[in-house]
Length: 519
Image (cartoon, rainbow, N blue to C red; front, side):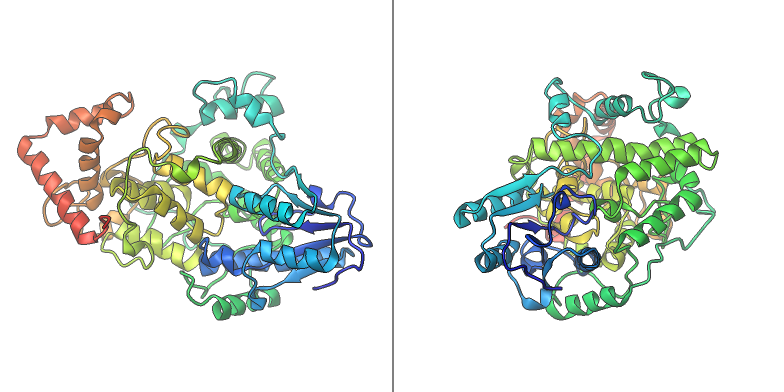
């Protein structure tokens, strides 16, 4: 896959999360004058951090996409991981030196860090640099910034209603939502009960082809020290596979998704979720087509409104909203630490070696598959890091490294903002905190654990519950002015002085045992 034209008008750089054939990058493309460039580089996996699973997915999807472009007759220049290229900028500089392009073009990257690097490189090369709009997203360029500029305190729900009305999605008329309610959150928080999910063992079923198997071999050979495993690879790496997975979700799981989207169960990492976030974020799927298929299922009577609305809200509402916030605060995210948390990430995040069953379950599946659904991320792995006062930048780097669907624009606001509340309330109105009793309510993790979620101190006290009450004590000033959390402060104050002291001492012992305090 290495065809370089002799006289180059434009070098068109394709990034690993920009694999859509309708990209603006290919508008006006001429194979006699232009070349598409792909670079597999060690920097993105090693310096920036990436697991074996995440790296393999990106590289395999890139190789498949390059092969598709070649089949369409486009000139492709491809540098793979075996050539030990340090960075994308190194590869681009080498190519520019070889072909002297009149222009370098790229679609707006999903990581502002890379955009800054490319701007600096093209200035150094003295080559015109064109950054094209990303047509993958539903909102138009500039639409979010115009919307947010009119609000003192924007929230996702405000955006969701605005964009639904603007695009007339799930609307009964121009101003009223189908069904009479904007969201059905109250219907979407069911647990499985004692019997568990009715369907067990659900999981993606993409079978690695020759290209993917070669990528897996290359990752194991060239990047052996990356975290995680590659014993099973299940993810779509091209559009055909992604569409198949989407259709399976719509037909087999969407109807149950709404009710059980927050539920968890031992040894069931996938449940009724869509499993398409990586395909969306690599742009193998369009959010528009995903939404349309969900609406079709509702209109045909194959899925209830609470499931379809909840699913669409994650894409039309949350996904578009966090991207807008990412670019709005692009310069600030890396410095945010509003709660002034500085502890180290516990070592068990890298090997799942912990007695806490919920964390062992949630982290083991990330190591095995590069996957966790949103409640495992927010209310298990994220919650523990928040309550343990881990440096939010360390938490962010772990999430960006370990999940196959992680791209900066979506991972950073979700982790720094929603999960760790390090933005001080830019994204969410409150810290998402809970004791071990929440995990017991939404899963059967606690039934296989030696810790008791109802206890905050003692030998069998649940670390989540201990850390929760200690967090309420520490953040009393912040929580007491929040109408959704002030009651928890009152509950803390109603505890006896002896109970309070025992909880705080249990927390100190736990933090010392975890060896996470900064040097």
